[in-house]
Image (cartoon, rainbow, N blue to C red; front, top):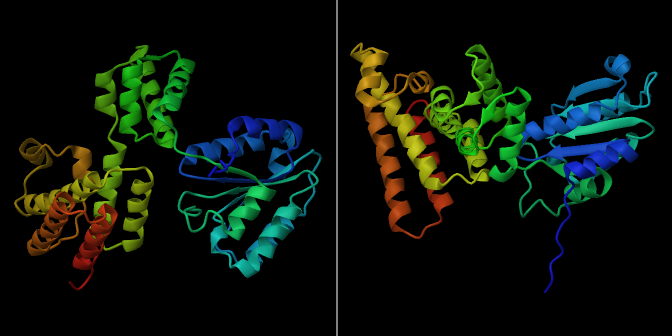
Length: 353
């Protein structure tokens, strides 16, 4: 049986549309936030610079109520002012929360973006999650058919290497591919983080009057982004913030972070918190903690400090150990084991426990 491959819009398709027929609705979604912002900026370039302030509006949609759609439609009804185009950028519109019976609200919104009016709907990774259940639903089907529907996926290392090289090259700074790979790895392939770290490294090179980024410079100045996220998830668990913890967990899963890496990250966050609680009670300095444990300053600063009883920490480590054993000794679904562990930890750290 032959399967039809679904065509995806690309940067080239966007360039072509902006050249030939710019009006209409653009729907940007996916894991890579940097690309969404970049492509929205490319659309905005259609505006005359002198009239840009009058023809560009940003709206944050707090919900998917009828009133929210009417407010956006009212804005789209304003014609361009002394310009060929007018752009409305909408964030926070979680269209998948629309009931199927209310899809007409989305249809009317998209139909209003005509005659020089351009609508950009920009969804964060958590606001528009397409899976096997939602991929072929009425709303995604409508958006694919009636908007410039573009998924901004996390980029591969092969695509990021020339992008990193161009950014450094524009500042007259060299970087070897092996060092670019190291930088990409530390930033977990996140283009927003990479952009920030590249700017930081360029500023340092200019200040020190050097024209090359070395491995040592990267290791001294760039922290491991994946480790940051894992610390944040561990801290959310210890503060009993279920929504935030699960949001980070699912983001890590979408980035294909191995379950054992997630487990070890949570263990490390909890154990480091336990160590610093003890160190604080003994009035041990951060320098001594680093010498004794190897815990760097940024790690100590990110550690959750909630005056948690030592017995709770011990119980948490037991839950992590139980998960570790199950992952290594049974054929149970890894995701189920990991999610069960997170839920148990959230219950353990919940107030009153």
